[in-house]
Each structure stands twice: as C-alpha cells, then as structure tokens.
Length: 292
Image 1: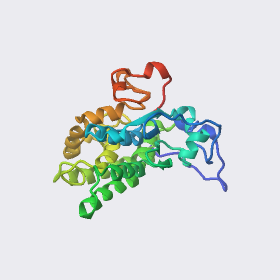
Image 2: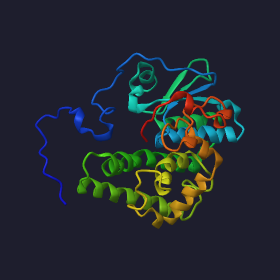
Image 3: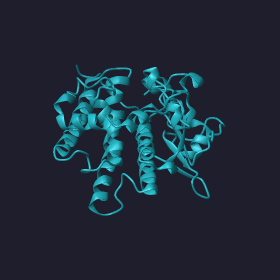
Image 4: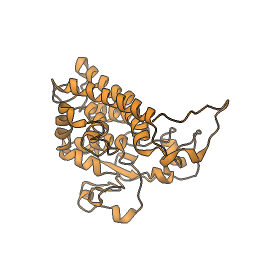
C-alpha cells in the first residue's frame, strides 16, 4: 500500500502531537527545561545513563575493565529517566549539551572532565586504561574504522528502521522498506567481515565490538524492536555467532543490567555504585519504568 501524499508546508512548525511514542522527549530546541543538579557518588567516574543500546556500550566497557582487574575504573552509574525528561535538567545539560544519554564526568584528575557521545566515552576510557583499543598502527585504525562505522550506521537502524517499524504512530510502507533494506545491507557488511575473524576488528575484542553489539547483536538475539524474524537475522550466520559469543561474556550481562529500568525485573539494576549491587539489586528502591 502506498503512503498518502504529504505536501510539506512552506515553513515547518513544531507539532508536539505528531511525534508518536517519543513526542514527549523530542523537540526542536536545546537547553535545560529545569534546574536540577546531578548526583555525585564516591568513585572516579560518574555515569549518567539509561540501558538503551547507546548506554549499554559504556557499561559493557566499564564492566570489562573491572573484570580485567582495573580497580581504577570503578564507577557510579545514575539512572536518567529519559521518558520523564531528566536529560533536560540543567546538570545533565552541563554534562552533555546535546541532552542525550550517556554522559560521563571523569573526576579522576585535578579537575572534572565531561565526556559525552558514547563513542567519545569509549575512546576516552580505552585510552585512559590502555585496553580494548590498540595504541597505534593498523590495528588501532581498524578498530576506529568500525567504531566510526557504528556511529554512522546505527541511526539508520534505530532512528530509521526501529522508529518506523516499531514506534511511529502509523505504519507506512515506504520508510519501513527503505530502512529495512539499509538495515539488512548493514548486517551483510558485518556478516562478510565476521566470516574471517572472531571480532569485528580482528582477533581481539575491542571497543568496536562493544559499540556495535548493543545495536546489531541484540537485534539478532531478538531483543530489539521484535524485528529478528522480519529481518531474517538467522541468515546472517557469522553475525549470529559473534552476537552469541559476546552475549556469553559475564561483563556483557552486567553491562546490560546497569541503568536498566524496563523489561524483566531480574535484569534491572537502576543504579550501580559497587559490584555487590548486582547481588542486592536496587530497582525496588528507585521506581518507575522507561522506554528502550
């Protein structure tokens, strides 16, 4: 079925009622809507996030660093309920003027440093601790290639396919077909590369895998948009094997749990301040749902 004809007006105006599920958090302006300071815990790193794919990238890396014995990577993770607009509080906007999760404040030095955009946070932490990103040469370039690939490609999967397939108030054939085609092309890109290597940049697990997996790995494992069958993800055998390989890592499970406020209760750890929190989960102390 073809979409109804839409004639764009001469000048676009904001209609807050037309945004579908995310109308309450999408707007054409920046800046804070309320004065609200961010909480600060005891650790060198303060993460403000939600366990969407972009948030999970960072908690996966933190948990991998801690699993490798890097005690200096201890962190506090604070839940930002984007459905309630907490990303528009003044403290969060100071940490990330783009008002998107995740945002990190690095307090390990003499002066706090804000780090925003998930890819920037991954690079910052990997360089700081000398892990999951080669220091130089072709190996580093290959990791960076795939990290940048994810940042350029995932908006077509999420804001494109995911929005029109799962969240848009109407189901229109053209945008779903357009972004399904692009999502499958991207899966084919990954599948061809992963035919010759266990991880996307080579033999070693890296921040490139941590950036790509929360989107494409979770899609293939049936956790994103309920679209695994629609996109025939089982046909991408190398991506499926890679997705399961990373899913089996204990740090991946912990990373998925941190700042999660939706889904199965046993998978929710709203805030993380200590490794023991995974045993004494805090979801019963904080409350309210959010959206993935």
